[in-house]
Image 1 (cartoon, one colour):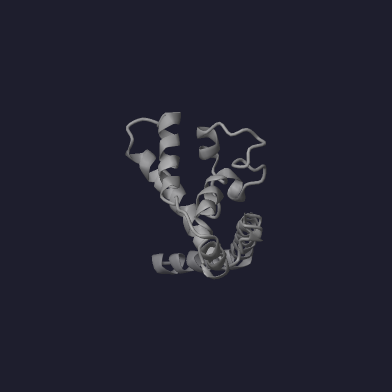
Image 2: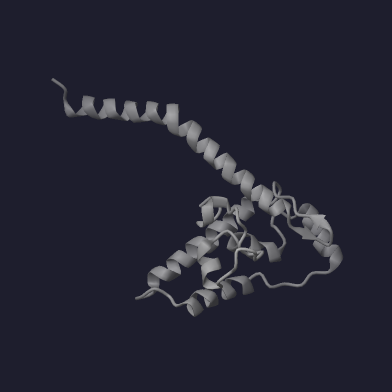
Length: 160
């Protein structure tokens, strides 16, 4: 007869083998696809004719995307009812206001080469353009820059 420990050990070994055989390859492929999507998204942004380096800024881009998505979700959880369109708009405007800045041209170009963060404008536009809840709040048309046809994460936000 099997005791509880033997059954538990069997299932633990089974799931570990299943993960290694299927999930490991699938999850890595999915994550790689999503990460490449984020890199490509930021690579297309330019500052004074020079492109943002999506690989250089990748970690911070993922953090920004996760941050705004989680902050919006947490904010919605505090409300007693679903927010109105205007309330959603105010949330996103206030989040965008956080990154409102002015830099001299020389400083912009230097940070573009050395800073692990994307330029402030794209720390707002990048993550928000990937969220369907943002495009819905502002009723973005299918042709709007902030509503690209192919979104990283399928409109639920990049990576997270």
